Length: 118
Image (cartoon, rainbow, N blue to C red; front, side, top):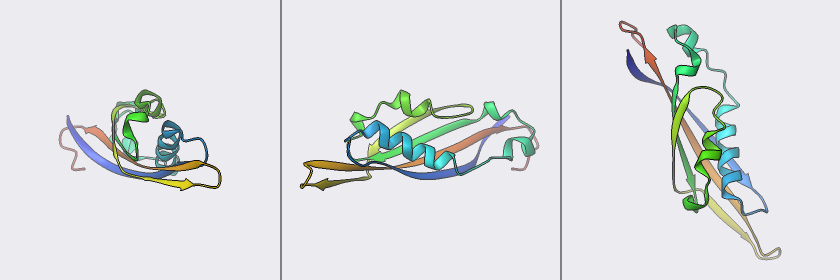
């Protein structure tokens, strides 16, 4: 079998008032995943739980993200997560507060049976 990239899903998530970077990252990944229904595993004749997902999160303070919590959102398969500096922080001086915006990419791979042209 050969691991093949089959889809890239993208999403955006926020934490409006809590300065919770993990919450924004989780919402971004959910946004990416929850707008899709992948039928590619069935087409390829492989178990959906065999998928491997590379999750990338762009967020202003990557070190404040609980990566295990974000990765636990994956409904199928296994994967890894990397958080890099990106996204936005929007300060609200009236509330002495910050809105955190995260971007997510979920890159889905499946092991294709030999001879599968996908």
